[in-house]
Image (cartoon, rainbow, N blue to C red):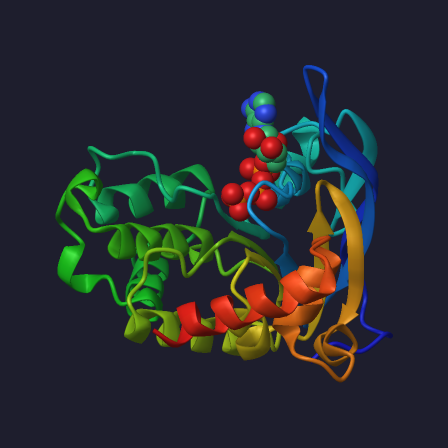
Length: 260
Ligand SMILES: Nc1ncnc2c1ncn2[C@@H]1O[C@H](COP(=O)(O)OP(=O)(O)OP(=O)(O)O)[C@@H](O)[C@H]1O
């Protein structure tokens, strides 16, 4: 659980991203402290993936700066220093479709210069429950297994900071419960920022919420502050700009969808 005295591990200082003449992210500022699970919430197209790519150094901000563990993740010296301390699960999971999970994990273990690669692989195989698919090509795995291989890759170096883009996307309900349990456990010690548009996920794992809409910050605070005595669904739709009557209707629809 986060406290305000814990050090800040992720800091975005007025970051923006412009694609051609489209501004996907507008001057976003927020911070996440050590030992916090922060949900990065927003409707489809809000700019979550773009922001996460900027936080991890995969995409340079058009303006503004990022500090990850006090370093600029975009600079080449920091990239090497951060390689073992940052775990990133990208939006579409691991891209090396011809490799098996075992080969992928060995590859990342070597790139990150881990000491005992076999031991690290054994740990993440257990944590992410991927033993049964370890020797099958990633391209032939179901979306749920691919996602878990992506999680295993992100956790391989036992990093201090985890940035997870929709970590439960494509998983079945049992797998979702396991991954959420793992995130809660890891969040005791690490800093975790995970993107989602599922409100049940926010309630299940998050200490704090950063919500964006059309690339702008619309909320930054605790889950209880977000709820503000109402349902999370109606607050979400209100912050996403839906008129009140419509927001209540959409909240009912989302509750039905999540119950099914
Ligand atoms: N490479 C790109 N070139 C042009 N526009 C882009 C590019 N990548 C993203 N966008 C646009 O930027 C906006 C934000 O996209 P982004 O993928 O960051 O949103 P998101 O919140 O992660 O959405 P989702 O929940 O659907 O994954 C969208 O309108 C998207 O179409």
